[in-house]
Image (cartoon, rainbow, N blue to C red):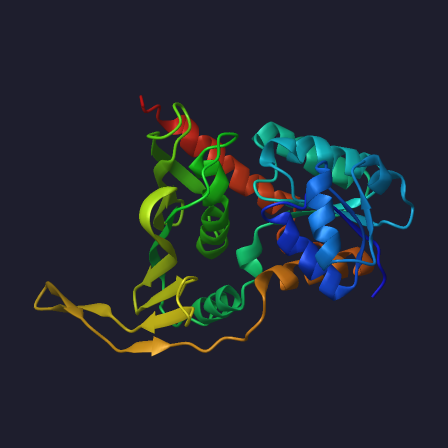
Length: 321
């Protein structure tokens, strides 16, 4: 592979992206605005260029694509500069902090024939890919309900709330599975740590095709849980990213006997999946899209659908904290 990728942001999540780009042998230059962070990364990932000036990435004709892994409030400005410089972009979630900004980036990428990809990493998780295959094959029948819990006593932020920080992952998957437009949004968020910054949030979605879903996210929880449950007419699938075995099938269903619904418990099956690192698969996909000029699975339009749900949920109800 050729070293034609630049990355900006080498901190909390960026260091993981850098590691994978380094292992794929596609990274040319890594940028961070903190010199101490650069010193640390150089120890582990030598033999590439480092800079504190973002313009070095934009002005290098050998860099074809840029990964933006900075705080979300900077995503719009840094991605826009990259697109204006003629670079393909992979921007971490959320794509921007508003739907309007996201639309501008998508239009800019389209106008210039550039790739805009969003880091909705779970689409590249082997368990999610297998789950999608099984659902499409009809394993659980018609989807009735989807819910997700993404909670932990985790990293607290003051530049964005828990809804915008954690929910994009699950919104993206739920939209992919539901394959329908959202017609009803309900959001309830509360702040307990930083005034005005929701640290616990619960949202409900209703889709045109009748599927309903809820999403629960929290930074203020006694244990870590990252679970997506898909309930169908003929069974249920659970994606549990905290568990060693990631994917489970329950053949539970409801039977009507003498006009009375009876819950019939079925067997639990652990579904085998490939052992691949989702982040590496995501970055490999970005590289392939650059080389083959193909549409990313999580392109800018997919990012816009997620931003629409984020915004409309938060605007659906105002909770006094």
